[in-house]
Amino acid sequence: MQELIIFLVFAVALGYLGNRAYQNFSAKKTGCGKGCGCATDANASVKTAGK
Image 1 (spheres, rainbow, N blue to C red):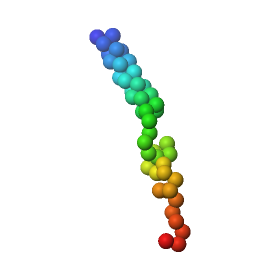
Image 2 (image 1 turned 180 degrees about the vertical axis):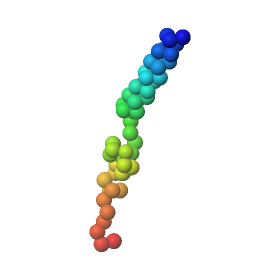
Image 3 (image 1 turned 60 degrees about the vertical axis):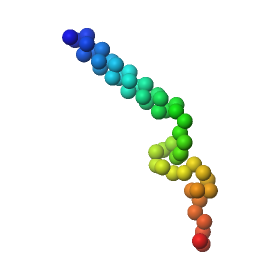
């Protein structure tokens, strides 16, 4: 019984680390990497003065 609990804890930890590694290495399509939701296109994030 103890071995089963240890195996389950190990499997959950391994799954968590795998998910973190996948998110870290997967291509990010938008944002600056901080998770703030800012645009990657320089023209989209620059506000024009006077308009």
